[in-house]
Amino acid sequence: MKPLDRFEYPPELREPFRKAKKLEWITIGYLISAALVMFFTMGNSQAMKTAWFEDVLSLTPSVSFLIASKVFHKKPNKDFPYGYHRVVSIAYLCSAIALFSVGGFLIIDSTMTLIKQEHPTIGIAVIFGQEIWLGYLMMAALVYGSLPAVFLGRMKLPLAKKLHEKNLFTDAEMNKADWMTGAAAILGILGIGLGFWWADAVAALIISVDIIKDGFTNLKQAVFDLMDEQPKTVEEQKKDPLLDQINAILEKQDWIKEHAFRMREEGHVYLGEGLVVPITDENLVEKLNKVAEEIEGLNWRILEFVLMPVREIPPDNEGEK
Picture: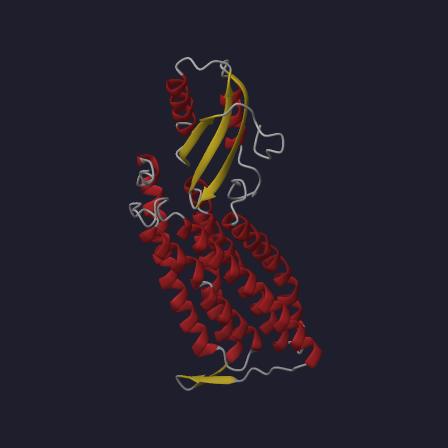
């Protein structure tokens, strides 16, 4: 049996794919520079250390996206007859774990700070002979580590939907976590400067709830994708409307008495198979091929759909009907 055809994005999506890769390279360069700036200005501030750790961990989605983009379009072969699409799901899992870890770290770190009642102090730095409160440098570093992330995340979201790229979508969520963590750290430093030692921990704790919620949602979906759950949309993670369109095509065939089908997600693309009970065997092979081609032509995401004639649909079949 021949392997699947090699997958390439359709022509209209190749430019958005190139743009997504370019954005990820920009993100990596930016995050490394932001992490360096924070490392040299963090002093003994726990809030700055948290923001630095978050920036370092934020590299995961971008790096995993670029690695996966080098692998997923490789030609299927005897050892990998279904191709390398799963690498996209693995990259998505890595990104979701990173996002969930950031949320978890923030909750644990903030809670421990409040329990221990740690009172951080921010010293003075001497620059060109002038004494400057280190908190000002910290806040400047945090603005640099937060503001560009807002725009990067917003630019990635529409591309993630077009390319059906859940990993890219998670990276956009990570960018949101970047600026939220930075904002919390700025509030924390301001709070310390005003004498409220608990301000940064409370701010980080509140923000971490939203981050860990996004992380858990994406982590759950990444695991479900690897378990061959039915295809879900990128943003809402709900049943893909394409399944209803496939069902409508099968239902309108006057030569099919009964049918059932199932689909699974392999990275960007879907693979599926259907069972049909034909009313007549006349030109059956041609009819099966025609319907399968019509379904595959619905959307670029449907890479392969196989139809098989059967005498009856098993009563315990749980596929789409």
